[in-house]
Image 1 (cartoon, helix red, strand yellow):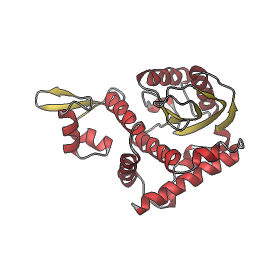
Image 2: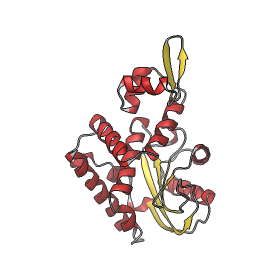
Image 3: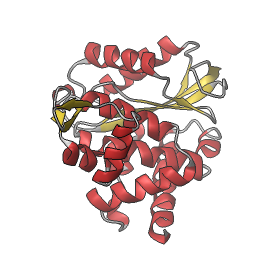
Length: 242
């Protein structure tokens, strides 16, 4: 999948954008693409990396718009549209991590991913996460980081999942506002069609609800899991109103 080539229609479908909008972005040089004669082609890896950066840097309005479009395409908006209960478990949430550096956080999150027994290639995931962070930090303002591998390889995982870590001390992780980070999500999506939607949903949960504040108030994995599912339901209700 990482070496797949998209045509214009496939790239637009993957990004949940109209074809003319993708063509305009390509003409402006704002999205990575190549020309083969009169035909635009898009490399899967390059498009995915570009889209991930766009989501992490999006305004609340743009993020909500993407989330609404991707939700409508792959999920309904009923209560069953919740994805966090299927992707996370209390035992996959680790508060009280003693990491003090970016590298140690990445290693600890990979170890937590390995403990799910859904990770097939631990070393490959670690390498991909390091490569992704070299491109652009996945840390956001508010003390949050949304780690994800540079490549979304179906064979790397037995199923999609999200693990969550919380450090005792604030860690420098490369946030654009130079703030430190203490809440970490590692997103491991087997199906890259929904990777961007999961990323958008977590961004909304963390920045448009009180999730981060409430997470900092407890170290109980069961309660942290409950907070995640409650925050997602709030986002779903907000999306229905749009």
